[in-house]
Length: 172
Image (cartoon, one colour):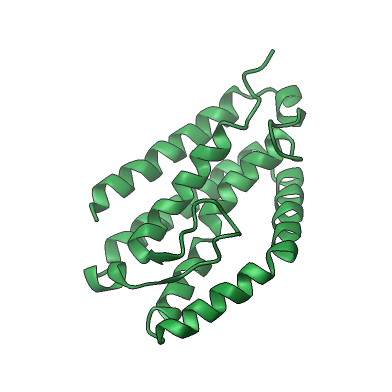
């Protein structure tokens, strides 16, 4: 894994997030996004959420990456079975966070989470980055059956770029 590439990806996403907010009018922020039930402001929060959940996802790898493979497979199957409740919580969390946190709150939080991820990535050993676990593939199109910690560091930016295309901030 080339850590510098991941650092650069995260910085591009951070700069893009700031640009999206800086160029968005109040009307655009409250407009519906394309292909989701969220407004643009709520979708921006959902894009941020992909980075915010990294601590939890990394902790799962640290635990399940040390357990027998069967434990991780069973856990991933359990999570896949709970896709409905996950989808509901994901929608409501992004709806609530995006409805309450505005421009200043979201951009400041984005900056803090990216800075924390940079520090964590710099502190990871090669052995830790190679450790992995099975993931619930029904939860997100960027989750694969098995992901290493190195794979996981790339996930939030993939998620960010996917949802960026659903924003309708540039529409008339």
